[in-house]
Image 1: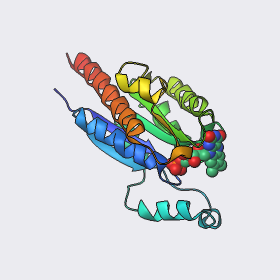
Image 2: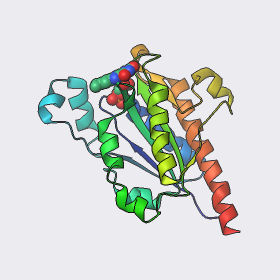
Image 3: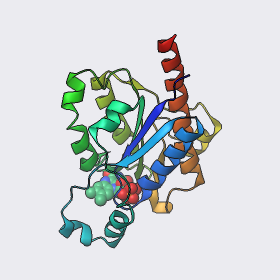
Length: 202
Ligand SMILES: Cc1cc2nc3c(=O)[nH]c(=O)nc-3n(C[C@H](O)[C@H](O)[C@H](O)COP(=O)(O)O)c2cc1C
């Protein structure tokens, strides 16, 4: 059977979403996928970043993570996006990357892939669901196949978010529950993709 190509494309300012992206990448690999974990380009001015030491430090610490390109999307059979919640919506850095996908979309190259999304916010009711559903709006425009985790695994009753893996950072960095939810979400998305890919090849 063909290997599934899985892209984890994320933005993270202070590291929470990066930790979840790593967990998602682990989950995708556990499910047998070839994985690319790439970050979208930082667009904020250095003057804003340097005012927040955690932001500046994370940017430096992840300088070796490759920047996401349109080729990652073209290559992938399944794309899992990660973003912090920003006033209830995805981060503008991730949105800016998404806004460069017009040519791929026009050629139909974003259609028929599997998509999923995860997030982090500082508060429990701070807009995780609207952020995730906002990304799924885009997947609909692409003709993608949304694969949310739902409550299809016991970890989902612990993490509690059927729309996508998520973490509330007020309590600290992503814990094992949030990381396992991200791993599970990726395993599930890759599993569905493998089934689709095998069916299409048959
Ligand atoms: C501009 C801005 C807007 C934010 N908006 C929200 C929000 O609407 N709700 C919330 O709970 N947290 C909000 N946060 C907090 C981040 O979502 C939270 O710190 C997130 O976990 C950071 O992820 P990161 O460490 O990967 O950058 C906001 C942070 C910033 C800087």
